Length: 128
Image (cartoon, rainbow, N blue to C red; front, side, top):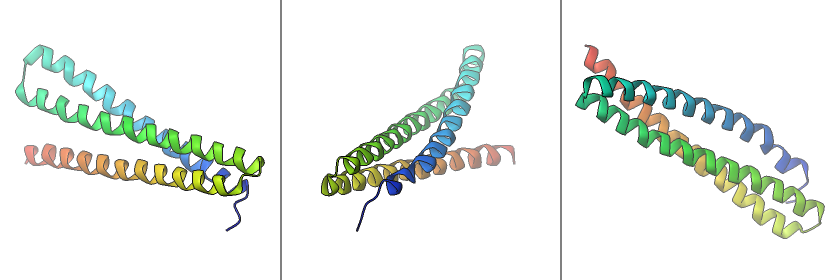
């Protein structure tokens, strides 16, 4: 397979949009944790404490999603540099790792979405 500069460059918009989505999730959960922390200080509710603990776990997953997406982005840039310097074999290996990092990031995203869905289902069940 011929690896040209345009192939790793195709990852740039995908990774950028992914990072925007991850950042939006991070900010939303961070705001919710702040709200719940304030509520916990006022009520010392065990359920609020548990919710904050679960959200903290999700925040850790999102941090790892962001880190692997950034790593993927960095490897894509390195791939382009290697292609430019005409190290085709090394460029292919680095690009493979870039794709692997992006897949790990997306798998973590799937796990986080599943946790989010479970948390919402618990909230909805609580209302019934």
